[in-house]
Length: 51
Picture (spheres, rainbow, N blue to C red):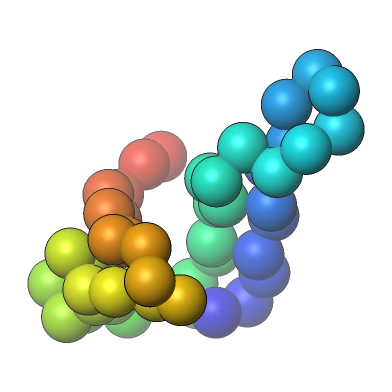
């Protein structure tokens, strides 16, 4: 990824969401296809494309 932006709630705690920027749309689509619904530190990961 080119960049990762971790999102926080109003009290300053991590919301459990992040925005990830990839160098190309193709790489982003591949990440969604290959990594969505996998476990990461015991938590289910859900990935989606956004503009």
